[in-house]
Length: 436
Ligand code: TRP
Image (cartoon, rainbow, N blue to C red; front, side):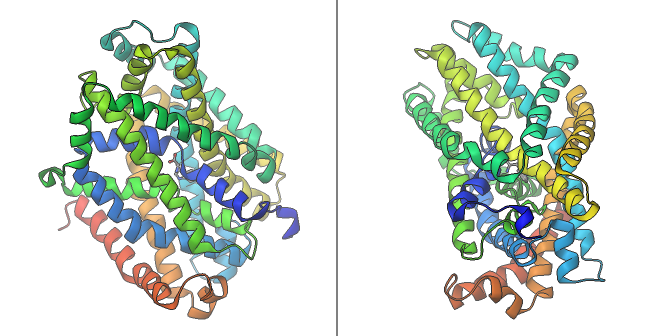
């Protein structure tokens, strides 16, 4: 059984795949739009706090559960604690994967649409207003959004139906570094524009008045979303991971790169926001209003725009694939479906589920808020309680020996899992519905 699941080709393959899942629309599109909405620097600090104190400990716990059981999310919980309701936590993960992917694919579709816009006429010589108009007309065109959503989802299904190593590992080695270098290049340009000083100040000068309970909830949700934590994806990933891989080290590496890329993207976007005199709180449209305007000014802008949106599509696909993988692994392992069946049937249902998000911005916002701010933290809460309280020291240390995590750090990790993460998540969720 272990063999038929396939394995990553070594720890590097796993780390790249986990990075592929973490780095996606969350880093470029969502991070900048949420950071813009909640006022910049102070929000980023709260976000970083959530990453370190809540998301990293839970990420390590998910990897541990996955590698220990070699199962999918639902199977993992019922293998470790048979006959208890813990398997429901796994169910939550599968359900969240469904819902999250449905609207993620809609955004993936927007990116595809921008590739086509870039190919057709580039963005050269267009006013900022005309570029803003491009997004407005996409939002108003329901058929077009559903079309691109279908294209994105079909690509995702196709890759997943071909299996883990073939489907996911393949492009990560080239595309992720390429996206990184492209962002670095754009950073150099952004820092030479007129809005650079204002953009940097926005990202580095905290204004604590802007931090409301709602902002803290968004920071928490974004930490889960960006790191792909809270729905058991990493349980599935851990289950393909070889015995000699060091979990804490891998988790740190994935987190550092994911966070680094988000912040890098911020330093590209916000100088441009001020340069083109846009509002930081433009919402989900933010990157689609700023980046094309920048490409319009750059030499070889059309080529760069096509390249950038292609790389972003790849990053989005390498996040969408593991989302579908969680669902598919469950149906393959627990229900005996073939990978082909599970990918196309479940992928088709997810596509249908995404259609309302493509048709209606309000619904889109609702699903975005529900999954990211509520369901992911809730899933994370269960994992933290499970790994912190239900698992024994022996069970944890079998996967994370002292050679991988020094005893002091191990105790610190367990403390975060037992107390800090559950309390923080509970307080933030309750506070945001006004219970305090
Ligand atoms: N982290 C991904 C991104 O930033 C989105 C995501 C959230 C995800 N949860 C996931 C991807 C689970 C894969 C698996 O774009």
